[in-house]
Image (cartoon, rainbow, N blue to C red):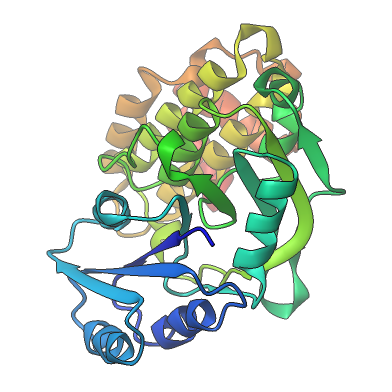
Length: 317
């Protein structure tokens, strides 16, 4: 029986953390090390975690000053003793057979990473169309654009990793897309990969006011950094317009967030967009070839050619 280390970053999660940890405690596979990293919570999260730790000696609680989810995960990674590593966010939970199923597939397929489907509230599912195995990294890269656009590569909590193949920690300088960058750096060290249709983890959707609605220059710069990593991973031979779908999708969403944000003056919005556009990959793209709706195409056109007022009117009309 091989030990799986499961890392949970926790910040002000008193509403969900009991459910999260118990979903791991009650796994059908029991050889687990549960590392809970309290990232400076100001609510009752730490107390709940410490109480659960007294009930199960597999739970280890570490507390640190608030430094963000990447720093918390890195703290957990440095302490892991397991041959395998998994992650779980504090507002999510595992279905009862997740660990066993993931490990069984890892063994049976001799895989270096297994990626499963995701279940969301109200029955939403994010799953591969079928079980699929890649026997080489080159085989996977030929399918990379398709898999990237399913968003199954983006999170770290629907995967099982081999600890010995983790050579890079999470980037603590960014707060968006850090999962995907970590995943791609890991996958570069892999040979065999397996996708399974089973939705084995329940993901609580982000709500208004959460990280997903944060705006500002750093978010746009993070999108640029993510796209660089994506293109480097794909390799020149696999770059096509479809590879840019995620970049376009994220860019149009967060550019709209900035232009809609009533807390920011129009003058400051222009400053943010001007700093971002200087090094943006958008400058090198042929907008005629971009597959998106007319509204997004116009927004990208206005951003590329620095027509800030027109972009503002388009979004706030």
